[in-house]
Length: 365
Image (cartoon, rainbow, N blue to C red):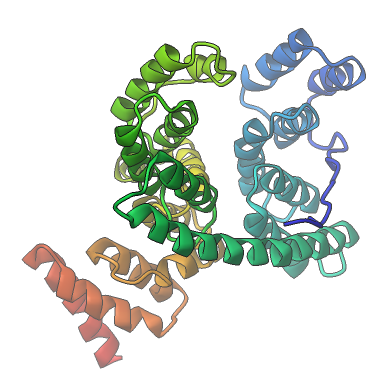
């Protein structure tokens, strides 16, 4: 596709709610950016219990120096501290755009305008985000058409690694798109078939290393990395993956359990949010981040995420239970359907009885 709409937003940090020493260090980094000054700013901000402006300053530097993934969790924390601050939420929307989550950016901007109608920066950014999403949706439709065609070619008995690689490349793009239905293990599966057909194919191995890392499957990731080192020791991707942390299979339920501890909740929720951003079609991650947002009191955010979960066919007991909880909080009648489904799928009698009590309460009301 061509004609991608331009999105180029500048940080809106202006020094509010910031310790003086942090503000001085921030200005030094901006005027003469280098690694040592950034490290000093980071250590100064994180060494003590930071003010919201301290975190916003560090996040702004990350945005300006291209470290977008580092900026996102900081801005999410600041947004939780002051949910009505339009400058923070506009910057969070910018960070989401820069990591490819434009749908979440649009959601943030809509939240700003609900609280601050007529906020000019938010209105301008939202118009650009919506234009990009319209353009992107057309591209996603094209990718889905390609998957249909390439899946047929890869299924042919004569198909080789080239056909599987072509399919995997399209699936790789869709794995990062919410509601596409493609998750990273799907990409890994196709690439492993391609690798079985040609164990020395450099491009297959490069993509397999990346997909396995995103899927969190350490065994296939390490094996593919070793094979890539053997087959293509000069690959430009090797330095990056040699220094990458080991692939870790996501465990959203463990993070959700930690999120029930008031002292650990914010760290666990940040990890759940990061997991969802990396794997938006991992239903366990989506379910758990919905529940965690409810636990933090972010009902509007949980409801927005729940819409993606509700669109999935064949949800399990836990998915229906999470949706029943969210819809129950806002008094949405869709709660009833998910209670009934959770009862039917409950693995234990105790869980079935819990949802039966909820249904009885609705009927009595």
